[in-house]
Length: 182
Image (cartoon, rainbow, N blue to C red):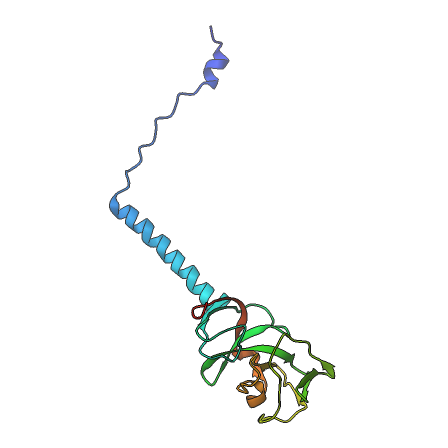
């Protein structure tokens, strides 16, 4: 037989709480909320973290070809040697960072120097200052970078318009998808 103390410690099972069955409207609302959250996250990513661009020139050939889909990362500082996307004349352009604010860049005899040191690059095209709109040696202004195209015969880069303001940088290239000429 059970003692009085054991009987006091036993509790009667609580009756199960009846839940209301979900209706089609409940599922539709849940689905709509999930879609809204997903769209919100994607919009935040596209505005503040990544950028998606299509290249419409051969200025960064052979790395980025005409028609390539390019994804950029907007957070963080750009470093020398990185391929970036930037705004110029209401267009998105691509180029390689050669020098940062305060650096002195000079181009002589198809040779690029920054602060008196030669720049080692994987660029296969000769670099010229002939036809440049700026004078060399050139000191990169504050809050700017000096950008040059990989296809150096295309002078539509910092040799034509000077330093690119950091506010015009759309981000550094982190991924590209070949859409033509695979």
